[in-house]
Image (tube, rainbow, N blue to C red; front, side, top):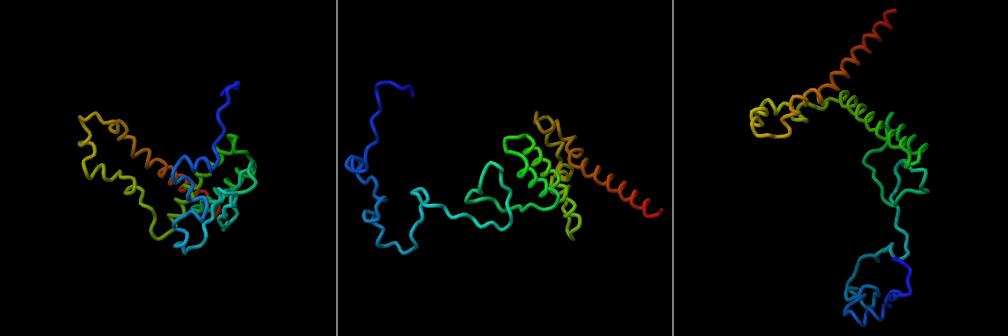
Length: 191
């Protein structure tokens, strides 16, 4: 808004609003609230009126941006940093500002490393992940995937042949790398 001689009217006071609007501000004063005598729970904490919000307990040291002094009152706890991906995430937060591409590229790389770590962790369990069943590739063959798409001008028909390569390709590559690594270790042990 430009600065002109015409000024907007100032905000109305509580008393003016209460006189103009029936029932305005009934919850501001406990004496005016009809439910106050019946309330039996603890007093409400309302951080919007100058109180400080209670902070969530930190179970492990969280990643903090170098731009902020403290964490927000509530933060995610679903995935604690672990392994090489956790080290990469901690380094991204400790070294780079959130405005730098290096910060986000390190976090993206940490996500990729975490997916590989999870795959190896899954292999070491009694019930490893079944990626073929989880991705639905087998359903394409069992439930006539190609026949149901033919002649219907569906967009997913174009990439149907690529799906097995995209899904299985990384696993085949990992298996080939693991095989070569095992052969190299075996050759070193024979010396």
